[in-house]
Length: 137
Image (cartoon, rainbow, N blue to C red):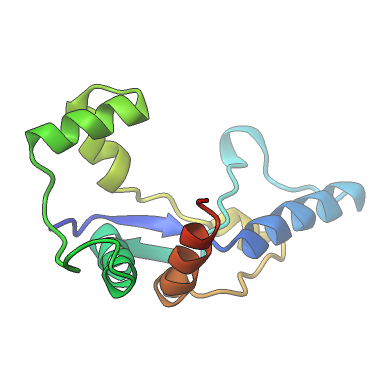
């Protein structure tokens, strides 16, 4: 299974980070930029498999899929996903399950604090699936 993790952020946290950067710039504070000024709005990391399990559970609950079991994609599925993503099929696992170790330290140093824990993505998965399915028509 995909135990690799990825940094996650709620849209509000992302927006609040950009507002904090702007607030600091407009206040003429000396904040890191360039090589040392990478800003990532992430409250922490979540394992890809946990995200996929939450989405599968929500889809199965609505009978969009027959089971909430998450399985590795076979060669044909990887080919279809690669076509949809516009990349060669060997890159699909990287696009949909790679490991990212970036940290969100700079935002915290300039006063930004995330409002949502990383687990929020798992808690909100059911509502997100409901919203997407309702608006597919």
